[in-house]
Length: 203
Ligand code: ZN
Image: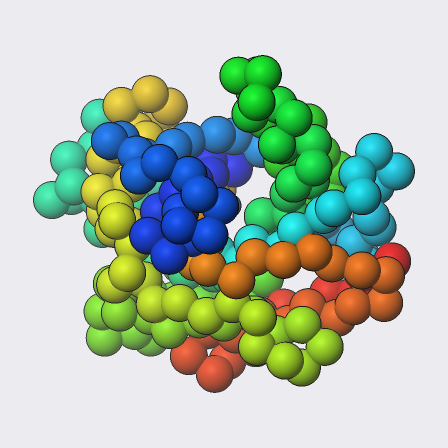
């Protein structure tokens, strides 16, 4: 399975990193080895001095598809989740400057946190889901899926032009503002509409 990640999907986060607003969604992949194993802490890797948390709404693909029209995209997922796209911001900045791919900064072991999954039927509208990340019980990021530049169904249409979507693939839909550095002993807890989705300790 693969993790398909979207960058720059919330205007406020684009502004905080002083990035240009994209014409098309920014897309990158993480391999399955980047998934943080259940109940494991996140270990800050030796190659970075600035690991950032990026909380993101996740979509789990339940049906094989290619060239999916946005009108039918809702048939390709039943479950919504919340996760973290851990990013070695120092390394990513160096790579960006040189125009190089981001994988070393984004796809390393443990860089993808997957929380629990809930049925999309639990939400009145998947384009109006509130979510937040707390660091040591203080809110650091909050967002609502209505603020995405590209909504879930549009993302499925877009990415499926390039990649066949397989059962179990996961889409990371981008992060809102408030990304920041994690330090040893931090506890990161993610919520969707008040429901706890994950809690991760940083080591
Ligand atoms: Zn991200």
